[in-house]
Structures are given as structure tokens and as C-alpha cells.
Length: 377
Image (cartoon, rainbow, N blue to C red; front, top):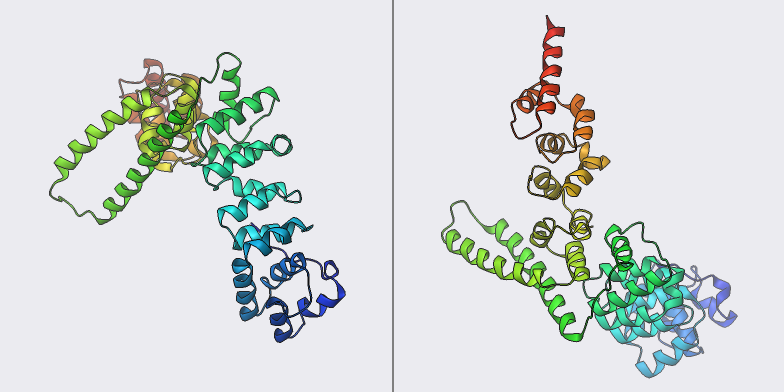
């Protein structure tokens, strides 16, 4: 969120001498401490302005005063505010949930600020944002942000997805959500009660926490560390239980878990036969290069996943990924034929001996190797 100062003429003349960039620091500090006549709303404006001052002492004092402003002063001061930039400053510095609610509900709040808040607010504030349907239609990216916010409840997601479907909202930056909207034309989302909300949130957070813990352990773990076999067995048991819980999810829950979940969740859901689910996994914003590198060689994945990776410009430019794709029997033949010329001689030789790929591709690779060797003579 970018913080910008107000124009000097936004302030009454009596305050301009205290907030101007060239005003002496003592004058600025007087205004911050409320020693200059000003309404509560004007004081909010002063504090925002001086929280961006060049002088560190002035900046710190302004931020502290803004954060510590009593609620019975802050709330009426906020209601009289007419400047969206000040609301952004409040959201940054005074970011307790009650203050954020007042900012979100303010008639002058900008869509850009609500969009930024939508990515991280707790579930109850996500509900508050989702209630403003006019704003959702005006700025559909807010729906995307709420969908990607791990704290947004599935019941809220269902509500905004159904709203988007009814109003023909498009989501070009979030293929999984766009696919879910298309699927809604053929089948309903299904019920989403408080119990399902809690179960999904718990499963999502457990997976992310476990992934974070595993990454921490991997950094600390030395070679041949004792207890790894027991740890692996326990991990396998947990994985089996988790898989059963995921299998019991409805379609929209699986799609969202594939989009937001841990690497383990993506690795499981990318094998799902439903195209919306496995495509949500492979297009997740959490994808890492190592995921693509692993999946490119996996012969058990749905055809659509391999085709997507092969057609992805950035992924297919990576030579190691390309080699893995070319040796995967699920690589579409037409694509493989076009990309043969990108392989070096050694990899072509390996490909022509790979019995997992089609005989035709083997012959094409051999023909290219023969041609290369003929040119050397």
C-alpha cells in the first residue's frame, strides 16, 4: 500500500503552517500533540501528513499519536474524513481489526485499498468485504484476492463465486476460479455450513504448518540423521489420513486446496482425474520451479497437466524440464516433434533408446542423430 501526502490546500490555513514541508519541527510537534485548534477529523489528516515527514522524530510522533488515538475520538474523526489517502495511512499504521472494519466500510475508501486488504484480512473482515457487491462488480480482482486469502471461509468463497457466476464476471488471472465458474453451469457448488468451513480451514492450515515445519527441519537436518525411518513412517500415516480427508471434500474445496495448499496437497491433487482440480494445482500461484521439474517427468499425471507444462513458454524454455517432457510418454506427439530440434545430440540418443516413448518419436530422434553424424563426415 503506497502512502501519499495530502495537498497542502487540503488543510485549513491555520494548520498549513504546521504541516508544510518547510515548517519547523517544533511547530509540527505542536500539531501532533493537539496543541493547535483542530477538529478530530483535521487532527487525523495532520497525523497522516506528518507520518510521512522527512524528520524521523516528527514521523515517529505522528504514527504513535495515530495508533494511540482513543476510540471515542477516532471513530467520529474517521466518519468526517473525505480523503482516501488518509484511510490508507490508517490501514497501514492503525491496523487493528476494529479500525480496519471502519476503513473498509468508509464511503471514501478506494477499491485499491480494499483489494490490498482483501489478501490478508481475517475471515470475518473478508465477509464484510464480500457484502459490498457493487464494489465486487466494479473491481473483480477483489473476488480473486478473497479467494486466495487463506483465511477466507469456504462459505464466503461459495457466496462470491455464485455471485460472480450470476453476473458473468471473468477471472483471467485465476484459471482455477474461472474453471469453477464454468463448472457451475452444469452442477451446483453444494452446501457449505459452519462445520465444513472449520474442517477446510483446519486441513489447509495444518498442511501449510507441516510444510513450514518440514522446511525448517530440512535446513537443520544433517546427513544420515537418526530416527529418519520412524519419521518417514509417521509421515506416511499422516499422509494417508490426509488423503482420505481430501477425497471427502466437494469439488470447490478440492480446487481451492489445490490452489492454496501445501506442496504435498498439490502433489496429491494434481493426480486427480477432474480437470478443474488438477489444472488448479498446476496453475497455483504457489508453484515452485522444482514442482514443474518433478511433474514434467511423471508418467502417472493426467494428460492435461503435461500438455499445459509443454505449452507454457517459460517452463518449456528450461532445458532440463524440456528433456523430462520429451522422455515422458504423455507428451503430445505433435509438440514433441516440434521440440525435437531443441535437444542436443546426447539427449536425442537417449530419447531414441527410450522404450517408454512412441516408436515414431524414437525413429524421428534417430533420424536427427544420423543427420548430425552425417554432417560431421
